[in-house]
Length: 114
Length: 116
Image (tube, rainbow over the protein chains, first blue to last red):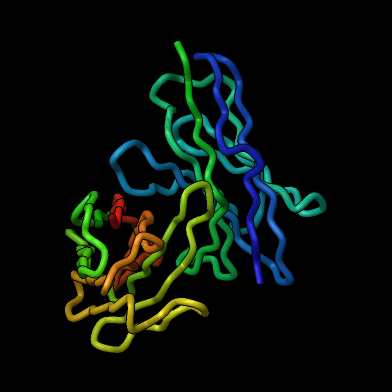
């Protein structure tokens, strides 16, 4: 069985400030890790994923996440946020690299203020 | 990425009535679709996996007679909440797996169900 914990349900931050959204997981087997973003009134979109190789993965819009096996974490970071980053962010794990059998965290609402 | 459309986005219904939620893959064929539910301040929880042309596989604790899933075509899966009660009020979201190629799941925008 797997579980995912997102420690912060809401993260308010000012525009251009750095942000970290925390994600910890537990699993008895090797997992693959994902971050999804949900903008208002839209479906979940894959932001980035770790399947293998380099533990630091990046998205096209400046987010990055680092897989830390010893700490069972996959925190999401961005050095400078924009208003447009305001959204709900979900961390998820899967036992397969296709990302279709997902266990989600509770989500973190990132609120970027001007 | 591929597009999954979920309808309606929100619905309010009376206790005891049934509600149907549609999940359509607009630009790909989805042999497999997943239905999730999210209660307030809780995780998205997988309810069931549906494969086109066969019966859905339900996760433990999900009542198959209450949450009827039909996946009659490669582009449409429906979830019907039968005899809805206030405790069924939740956010329901579906995802689809393309028939060919990339097996990444693509999500609909979700449906907010409120039972009064």
